[in-house]
Length: 200
Image (cartoon, rainbow, N blue to C red; front, side):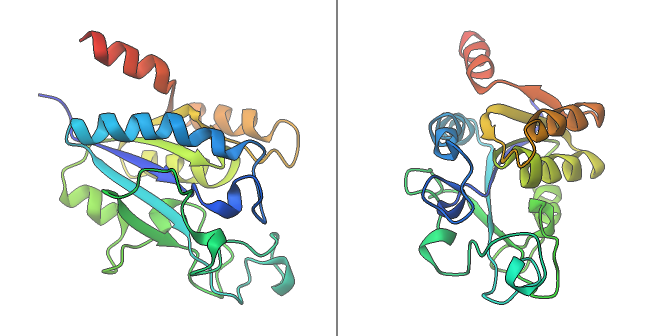
């Protein structure tokens, strides 16, 4: 019997896509491959999780208040919304970065559902054993989510062609992938995965 699986879409939000306040170069290119993965996941009874940065206007996460980052994904703004073409209608939404005193909140596992349940509790209650992680950005929230998943005991896959890096330093994305692989995350191409599954 197949292991129960979940697809985790990390922070595919307007502010991280072209035109956003913290845009990843070509960040919107992850939408099409991730949507193909969503279709597969729903067809096969997987859980689909969509995490989002959901910051208050005043937070230590922002440069204005002592953090690293420009203002982004402020609760309820256009920038905080998911990319309009991302298929999240059937997703469980997990919000993170809501504590104004916390400069962390990178991992989707730091977030909570609208009912206050942690992502870890959602997955464990559902009997999920393996997770597939992709989105924005490879070198920050995607990496943090994948590493959290491994630490929590899930077999974890990084969706390489469904993720893009910020690359503040030129090799940040590549280094993030290396770190994930060293930590037992399996790097996987969505295209190859779907092609293989279609044949079986």
